[in-house]
Length: 151
Image (cartoon, rainbow, N blue to C red; front, side):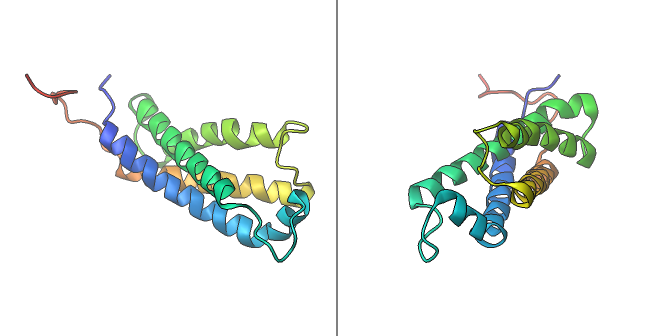
């Protein structure tokens, strides 16, 4: 088994994170805006979230992106490179990062019914598209290349 190409994992994670954060922004600022205002008990004319809350969610989006690309890079030797493996990695990350949190009583988003389903589906879409884009740019280290600086 070859070692991971860490610069490509980081680059792919950034690409996946930007995709995830963009989809989350569009979702939360348009489709789910009213539901979030109600759940967070914020005034309608005010910001849905503070700047530090938004920053925290953006960091989370990048962490999810890096995790998805790391998982893709780790399993691609066994399952093959390509979209199918990327979708499998995305599904695993989505299950751990969103579905289990969203379904846990009292610890989920606080969104109910259609809003919660929309949040879960859009989260799956964002993680899957981000993982596909990050996996698209991932290339393993060439055979015989050193893992570190040469001596």
